[in-house]
Image 1 (cartoon, one colour):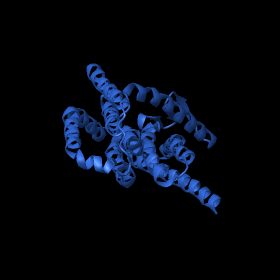
Image 2 (cartoon, helix red, strand yellow; image 1 turned 180 degrees about the vertical axis):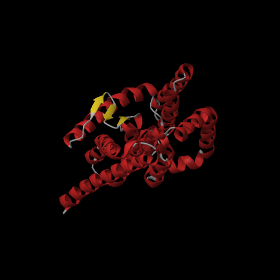
Image 3 (cartoon, rainbow, N blue to C red; image 1 turned 120 degrees about the horizontal axis):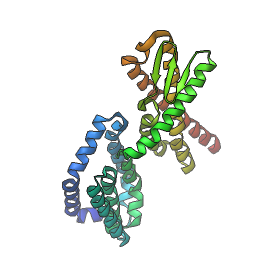
Length: 282
């Protein structure tokens, strides 16, 4: 039996599963959506389910043709997801609770359909992990080293261009103004959004596995380098124009431009990988 025939015969069970998940997770999902709306670090979360749905739709013919071979291991994965939900609820640990929904769904697919249908649905399912905000303790542990690195490199650049500047941690001191490399300038915010976009871009444009990984991993240096550029340029403008260059509209516009430049660089990397592919084929 194929997935297509199985879905036709069990559509009411699938509907019941979706309703059950909605009832169990509605508060958890609502809180996560609230995080997306409130925190710019996770605003890309609104796009992740849409991209996941596109992946599912684009590969629907391949998925529907897969043979159904239920696997008992799936039940253990479902139980693992349930344990995640229980432990996460008791500890009020949101990342564990939220990811349990994806674990349970993956386990259910394996249990009732088998490994082959799961493999064909693996990309859209695992892509949903990118919509889940990372634990605060991990975010904080990554942010400070990145802020210090961005501040250090930016100051070296300013010194190289002849600007009098001192640095204390993530604080940059110019003669007429003191700047702080805040969380938004660490590169982590850009990184999380860039990873979500680069994964989608990689699977849509690249054939080879290594090329997909090159594009995805490139998100880290691109995010950091573009934020170094942001702090460096802000330092120069602040030296000449004062705090107006580091606050308000310019600061917000600079954040937008940094992300835009990062996406352009990622597109160029993707283009270069595709160019190499075409030359190899010819």
